[in-house]
Length: 370
Ligand code: TYM
Image (tube, rainbow, N blue to C red; front, side, top):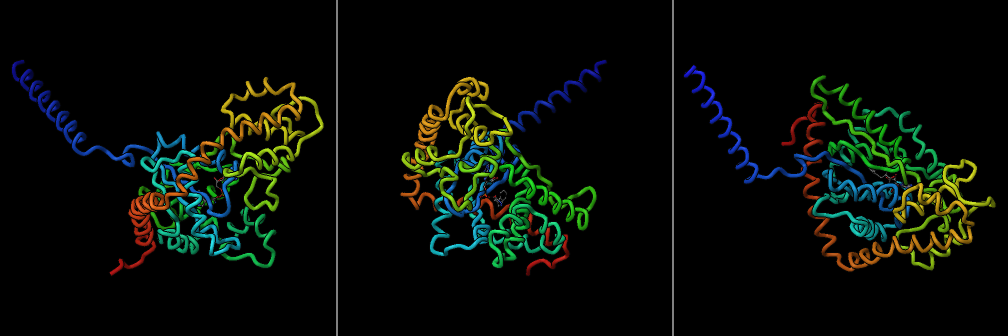
């Protein structure tokens, strides 16, 4: 009995010693968010001004995820040249989108914000992926087909290869989830297919080379539609500026766009009627921009006509965008600060990206760089 009692007390003392040691070590070396939190990665092309689709379908989501995830958010300036571009605007557009991220609520203390073209691992991994991706996987991408029609004879290899570069963007950072709008679902599926293929061909069963991430698509706002056609998504590339509200639009412009937007002749306003796509879209915009619940909006607007609803939506959109616009202007006036945010982000992202790239090169059989 006495021996057993002394054994218990020795093991208890040992346990409590280990516990105190663990507390002391964590206090001295706190775990970084990347060691404790799941990771997200996402980005936006630096072509043109951001619109409500980008804000409500993507950025707003990232802002909310910042508390719970280790966030990697980048500026897709390599993707920006897959359509004809003006070299005089390219660099400025990168800063504009960076300022828009921060103005919408991305916090560089909690999120890593960086520039795609500053990290050469993106292009390099895309090349390696090119050599294991069947051509027909790319030829069936819906976005490629849509954009290729618009460009006719001038379609570049880059446009076809766009989703492979996107796969490299994602897989380099080993994220758990990729928060995007509905239109990116197929590209995330392709990313998963590329990762699975590489793991299958070059990995060991129990030791996959690449982590296979999931898409994270919101149930609300994942598909914001055009103001001039409720069956088409709101898009930067729509030739009509009236089709989208941009984050930087002045109150007068917002008023004009909503005044001219397409509606229908039916009485009363309602969600989810497939014969009234514009009505559903405008009510959804009102719901998201006002922060009200769907049921409350349905009840509030059920008996309204367009003449009463449009000024309400205008006022709500102006009020929601005003603080973002003010912050955006302050950030655009402080290039030094924006540069420091991106420099810090680039440094952190480069370390992770290079590690994954080295792992892929190794399994493909490359000699170590000398
Ligand atoms: P981009 O610039 O076309 O879109 C950026 C984000 O905005 C979302 N989005 C929308 N969401 C709702 N309704 C809309 N009308 C709407 N329009 C755009 C998009 O779904 C996207 O989330 N290919 C990406 C850029 C990219 C990327 C990546 C994203 C490059 N590499 C890696 C994630 C991970 C794109 O479509 O950008």
